[in-house]
Structure formats: C-alpha cells, structure tokens
Image (cartoon, rainbow, N blue to C red; front, side, top):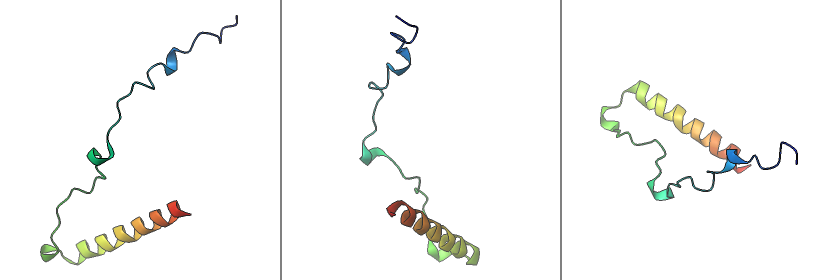
Length: 62
C-alpha cells in the first residue's frame, strides 16, 4: 500500500461537530433603534444599509 491509504485522520470529526438549530441562530441585527431620536445621518445610513441589503438579496436570487 502507498502512503495515501489509511491516512484519513484529517476528516474524522466532521460528522461529530455540533449543529446549531436555525431558531437559535442570530442574523446580527439585535440593535434597538428608535426613529424618534434619529438625525439626518442616521436616516441616511439606514437608507444605505437597506439598499445594500436589497442588492445582496437580488444577487442571491439570480
């Protein structure tokens, strides 16, 4: 047998890695935001972020 046979220790633990249920995952958007206290810069940043999210979702759908 050559050296490549029987040396599969690298992939041993792939099947035993813990999986996180989808309902426990976070998308990172856990910031509380109030439009009452928003200034012009905040509203502009929100518009840019929403536009960027739309571009990303449109790219993924294609």
